[in-house]
Length: 329
Image 1 (cartoon, one colour):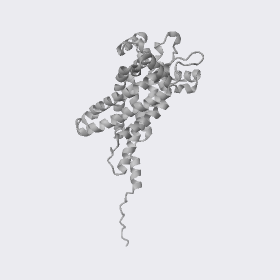
Image 2: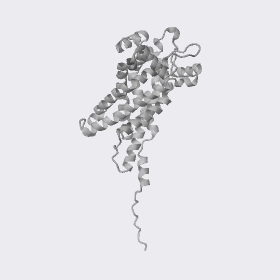
Image 3: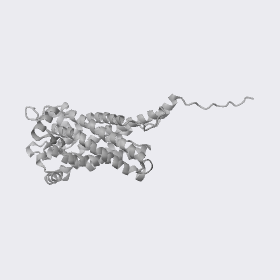
């Protein structure tokens, strides 16, 4: 008669622990989709403010202020062709830029948290500098990939303010991108890429890094309930994203002005453009209009950036939690 053998419990090894941690990680593809959908939700609400910002930054003397710009654009072209001009480009931009910007940041943040757990550290033991670096990385990658859609957005948003003879009259974002590639060359789809990438790098660093940092401090403070859970965490997210929006707008607005001017500048029959580079645009703009031209359109930019940041990052955070049970930021 054989005695039953007693099975020994499996001993967890570091390799087993890492495999278990990896299995709890949300795939990058899921993070990208969450980022794109949240960006589209924000773009639907904020696009008119983007149209106003672009037109003020490319031809600021035509409008006295934000409200004057909104009124004139509406009376000139209406809602669909005026305030929502180029909305298809805005949606494409969220899949090409917003998805990578938010998705990569959330993925890197989670990987760092899992690594901290694997090393026996507090999950949230992540420095502010690390968060800023993650934001720089995600913003730079997303911006370079999304530059063609950004160019299309600027072109389509500002087209109706041009004299009828100079309008390009793009029918949609695909027509815009295809015509730029055909008429001006494929590489011109990345016109203004330098200020665009620099702006997005700084903007994402401030938006995402500052939001995560402030959110962490507010969660510990108890002002918004245990771990910031009061009213589903929405008041805490609102405060975090509002603060990060202001910081991001101060840092990014000069690059935004240069980007808008480079991407909307006219090109004559010989192919010569108004500005030869970002540096040339900077020098000519400051020389002719003064240093404050770098913050022209600050109010509409902030009025647009704040709700966009609040909506997109809150949607990303809550959508991620609804699907995966984890935070995005």
